[in-house]
Image 1 (spheres, rainbow, N blue to C red):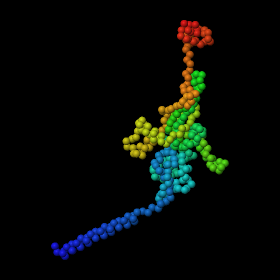
Image 2: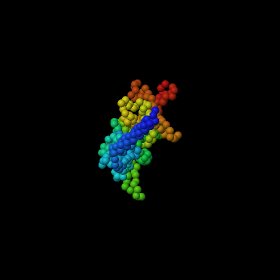
Image 3: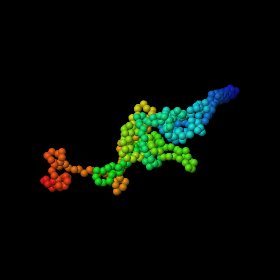
Image 4: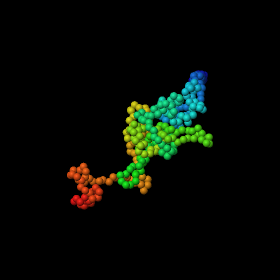
Length: 334
């Protein structure tokens, strides 16, 4: 091949490659400039209170329910809880109840929460088919005031059972209901104590969530003896959920999404339980106490006793009590 033609061919290839590269860079730069020009500039506003997780209706707010997150300034609303505002203190929202469902990441508005002092608080806190009942407690029976709305407790009945014999009364305690959700307490904070600090007074009443049948049982138990609260661990909720799944108490529809399935599982796991209760007698706590109630002595009616067939009663030498020892009868009969 002629050297001159070969040189022209090589030069044409070089020019084509350089042109392709320049065209590629030019179009890429233009696309980047257009994308940068199309990207909207969002002005970041103050931090607002948003839900850390899905909060269905009736959820009692605790410290893990909310967090602060920056929110676009153009989307700000007056109903949001803004950080550092007097009404946005998370501590003041503890114990309130969700009136309308809140999704995860959604800002919390003032209309979605209802406090213990607001009308409709208990109605919003109650689950479907549940009832609210109040139990009187004191410092010892109420876990020294360490029970708060949203906690789960067991209800223990302590009473004295009268025996039929001559022995002392039987002392016994029984766990009559388990896994009860606390709705509210009447705990109050006084203005100032003598040192100038707020003084928390232990509550005297606790309102709990129960089924209609358990409400009847609790009402009767208050007249039998003393009711005490036994605080449950947070880990027990997962154990109750596993028990409910194993027992077949949970029936989830086939078309339910994961959020609905989780909500149904938690609703079943949080229901109070009044079956399989346990009890402890005085004999289990002290060797000097009895374990059972003595049975009442039986008195055998004789053939001549009043109201029995066979005529008038026979005379008894020992005051009317007939004693039989083998073939010997105190009345003289054989």
